[in-house]
Length: 310
Picture (tube, rainbow, N blue to C red):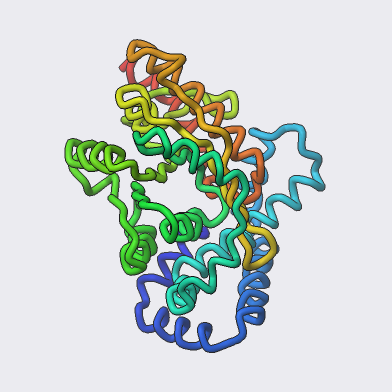
């Protein structure tokens, strides 16, 4: 449902331009109030979407009471609508304000990143789709030599992700970059002691197996491979929205996978990364992007044995 509305918005460029002009001229507090009310309206009136999200949350977080479940579902939908607005429209305000908007980003544990960079091998920030992950990347790119890999999966999302490049940020589209070119460019960036901002919770059927929330899943293996082969420290990282405008960015102590695993223990190393990813998502589960379709991952995993049997 949320992605349906993204498609309705980004495929109407005239409407998008009109909204950008009107909202960027209006007081930010008024605009965010209206967008939040829109999110609340979607929570109230879209019953099927609300039921699906609650079912997914309940399955992966059975400890939640019915009241807590409703509150997290409501906050999730309102947060995603705010994030869509930020990524489609409001980011241009940040570009116009340049450094002034950095006051909205509050860093915790930044010394872990700075310390890891002293090794001279680059650093991987391993993060979930939590909070506004593109705003986090924008903020980090103001202070560090950053590079990311994005994945759209649909034309609607690809239109939104284009804002990454309009902002002057660096990144590759996983689905449109030849694998060998992608690996080569990421390695080159790390050799220059750069920061890789890698999202570890998106799903593709060709990814290696792992376990997430106690269920069979898939995870991108790039972080694990780069860390083991090139002795790159991995810093668990996440960001969350606080209130309407502010974002808290948290860096945890570096994880040195290459000190505990050999290249013959890739599966074990990936499982550790999956446990890290789950722990980060649980920091603020109502701001995790994938509640709307996470059930598709389990369904695909359950269907796999049947396909192999045929």
